[in-house]
View 1 (cartoon, helix red, strand yellow):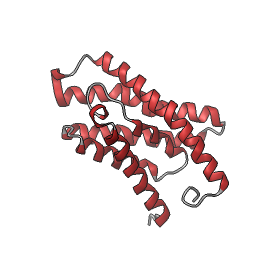
View 2 (cartoon, one colour):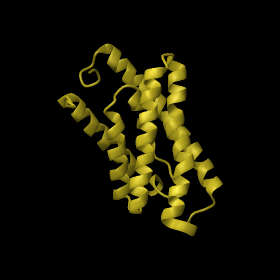
View 3 (cartoon, one colour):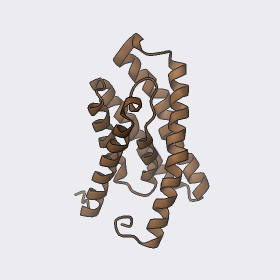
Length: 171
């Protein structure tokens, strides 16, 4: 039987809630062809917490639903986040060098979102969207900003709190 501690369940809930909150703070630009989600900075948390993998998926589902995305986009767009989060978690288990780990762990959420979301949007919204390559490039840039410029410093802070033994950050 799979057992989840209360601490991990609460941490997953907080991560999901933070994802939604950070998406809603920038709501007008959190969805659509031109989007920026600071909540994507949280996609590096699977390096530290396995429970963040489903938490990010749930947070993304809620964000997409609340912001009025097409139901196909809600599910499949969030599925991209789930897959990217699992790969990021796996990278954390495989790579021990901290700098290399952060760099490689950021690749799945950046690249998968940039390559797959425009395809999902095409099926959901059709010709209302701009051409694929422009969407992919814009997502590549905006995801890189969220993951590397916001997410890496966030994770360095989390890592310090874990090393200092702060309750809620350690298992």
